[in-house]
Image (cartoon, one colour):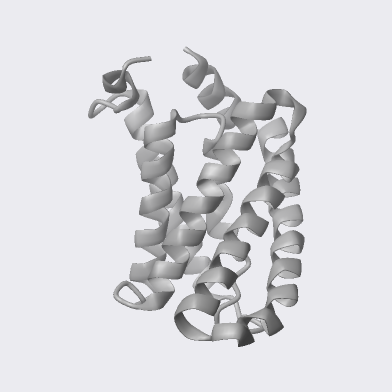
Length: 182
């Protein structure tokens, strides 16, 4: 595939899919913002669902663009665009996106949406803990690390199970996957 082929042209099905998944990221970010959190910086990660679904639908370039749009959307919804929170979110999301896409490319059908989701969630949280120790909390970040990583594991399992069930039963997703294959 040439680099040009991975950039969706306006009006084609891939650009419509990217726009839809981006809008879904914005919507789920708003929903997630309204859900009470056990700690101020802990989120459930439901805004990652479009990324999890897109692993099988988008080429690498548009997939990374979706990850960036997800961060921008969440930062706009939460009012954290110009804060360290946006930096943490960007680093975690990009790490998770690379891990999820890499896991799918490496293991293909031998890894489920649950496995991809858990890998993405835990890698995102690990990067954020490292950043927290470097930028904000210093060595004290290790105190929250076990809870943060456990939360990533739990939410990754739940989101992956939902995505697995959705992708198996959704006619829309089946059509989108067929379109993605050519």
